Length: 307
Ligand code: FE
Image 1: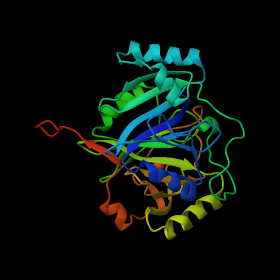
Image 2: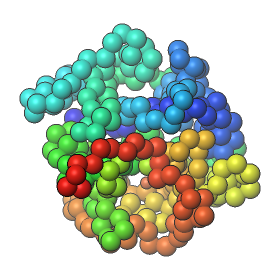
Image 3: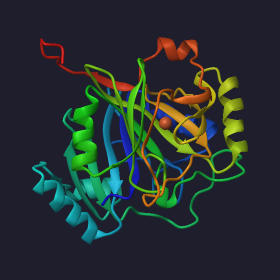
């Protein structure tokens, strides 16, 4: 089984702007560039966790999901293939670039690439925050954080992500406006969520969690004062994972949720629920949110019957 979100790769014409953004605003640091000039962002002792490849357009490139070891990874891949998924083996160049020991990949029904790996390189005691922080990012066994993918159809997404990839349902948020499913693969309430927007696919946001409430507060101040990067959703608390967070602009159209205090789930006791609102309080939408894109997305061909 996969046990954590190991890394995320996007592409953007503004990849260079991530160097200052990641360090000064997020508190992350910049690792050595990728072979194609990708800016690589480090949030813990892993070599890097986020890659922003230079490109003409904003693109979702890949999400990397880790297994504990090679035996579990190979069993997992065999399980995926037995269900009819087309799973490819990574090339030597891909292993080197992703800094992992072994890699396989497949695509979701809309062409979004998911990679399955083990042995991500790490350098103990190599992470020091890029700006003053009281604590560190919450990673370790819980992985990088969570991603929210945009999908055109929630039921088809569930058939792929839950039934085939094996993500476990944490809960749903469903209302006239929202339709999302949240999934876990470790103790973090969700490492993956899917949000339904008909006719579209892509990534809405990446969530990074900090250990200290003060470090979230510092981010609120820094983004409130920053001339270039707006707060998209004001400080608020989610109904399901009880994360207190802000959503902020990045140099690319993907958003970042910067949060603190998310709950953990235990499969022995957890009962999946459903919520009709995403937030208990806060998360008010700014004008920049209303005017901006819902993330990095592609339009899909919609059949004539509109489904
Ligand atoms: Fe989130």
